Length: 474
Ligand code: UDP
Image (cartoon, rainbow, N blue to C red; front, side, top):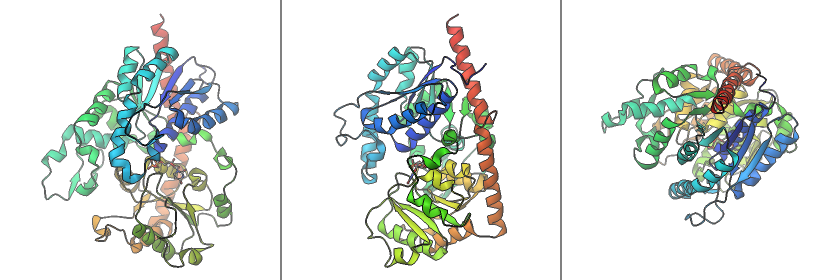
């Protein structure tokens, strides 16, 4: 079957309105559109500016037989959220604990409008975020299969299953300092202080997510088989759910990311540095470090002696050590706010990535063939660090133990300097890490290329959905 032309399939994509969830799902929709699927993205009006340019670019490129389009449903009123807040990424970190559940409750009120869109569009399948469990019921009423997108890798999904299946927390003594996750292909040991709070949650949202997921058609994963083959098997055989690995999704743009929106000053700066010499430091879209921690990072980067690009969310300079920017000027670039991460990671001058281990960032680093220094902050980032450092062995951990934090919870400059030196250094371990990372980068590109594992997984899903549709009309 020629699936690069129109395949007659219509798919509806409905991402959680948060940066780390929307971008990969947009990339996924584009990949389906490139294979001839009519891909519609659903969101709310205040998020249209994030989607429309993406859709326009894809349609204008002439390479998308799909085509792609955007549909909007109004965000529910009276949610208890600040006016105009329709995206989780616009909530300040200090408000997140109280606003997160309000936001999720508000999205549940979209069930009616979502059902309306389904009745009008009659898609052959919907891909919806894990935080929208109610989309399963709305789709099932119309006989439309729902695929779940978590934005997580299979390693994290297998750990979550292990917590649920073997309930190790129920047997954990009060004095225990660590826990070995039962039943996984590798020995994965977590400090009890690292266990994300959602693994402890059993009621409400957690149960709803589990139930709806187990009834859904399967999960779509931003990862590739060669990266997680043991966990692909474990997920199928032990967890017992279907998964299609379609990533790295960010590679859907090929190599033309460099010119998106004009060339950034940061890339120009990188042009003047030597190959593989620069360490790129960025902690995603939601990090919120104290001024004391930013100061230690600055001192650590300075002491490492390496050229760096460091993205700092916080405005102002109150955290900067006296004379810092003058001392590192020319060698270090501090970017305030937002940097074009993917072009930076793929710039030949960049040789290592200090990351908070958000899965998008981690996979972008892997795709660029870079070794990583890991500093997870919360949630699945803790698992991603284990995957990167212990399973794939392409990373060094900045905070090896809780003792690596001072009494004030701050990681000292010396720890940061040490990790950057290890990451960028010339010893045998560093060379081996770099070699493995380069190899994985090549595998990532092969996976999404013609007849690669992710390419073929998508073909298999498309063929299955086309067959399913044909049977319905017999
Ligand atoms: N990102 C970026 N520039 C920045 C910070 C982040 O382009 O200055 C992008 C990054 O490439 C990634 C996403 O934002 O695609 C962050 O997602 P991730 O899952 O890594 O972390 P989160 O922000 O969800 O914690």
